[in-house]
Length: 396
Image (cartoon, rainbow, N blue to C red):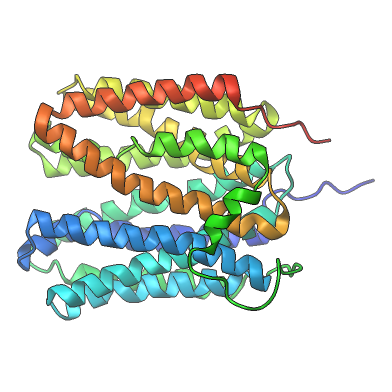
């Protein structure tokens, strides 16, 4: 009797737990960082610059470290150091309140994210086969997103019981962050032949991959980046909830509900993508995105916001992990870090542009115009992908 190969391996379980604890640490602070920054004298404009610099740092470094991990044939050192830097950055934000120090601490957190993202995804890719990749990436995303459920709830409870001790939350966040780092020491990495040599590549050399990447990779990544150029930060969605309800609690609970739906539906949709087709599930996700953004332009009621964010959670589950699985199936194993790194780098940089553009449209014409424009572009991307992007091949 032939033993059935395990799909969710110990490495996948451990990486998923690492992401869970790391996201608990990050999401504990997500609702309170803007409040803390304003308390120490940061203006909204300065907060915007801070987040822009942080995201740009993360964006460029994702491609660089993904490419570097391909060059040396190792993933785990980047993953471990990335989670360590992010954990370390949490208390550094409140040690001193000088703007330059805060900028440095926030940038350290984003460098940590840049260090780990592409190598971690490449490590996940190496643990699975083309036939099961969507469910593995989606399984990991589900655990990661559970952290975004627990983290804000912990923050809400802490603020309720200790309203005057906001900075203590930054020190408490070190605990789940360091737990994530410790779990990485239980992971066993499979060695592979390096892409070239042990030498570190140039910082922007991963952009050269575009010229030699498979044509199908470029055909897929093009509409994904166009979509990202109009898909602004979720902070704008939450801002609409806050403006309409005038309730911090409702805003945070809607965000928690969104992440709960995302976490619960991620693995089932990944499994469905492997059994049916990744393209079908991904395109279904784009339709859900369009529906949620068209609806956000019109709604004002609390119940409607929960329904919309539930639909938005399904969109995320149908696209986030599946897009990386789809891309990784198109490239060589020894180029996975560079391929995913280029994609997530362009995605992060596009997010910056999209958020600034959406903010401008919001300021000039109102929130409804910003959301409707994004919804229309997502439908155009849907039509383009339906016609021009080939379905993933079935693997025997």
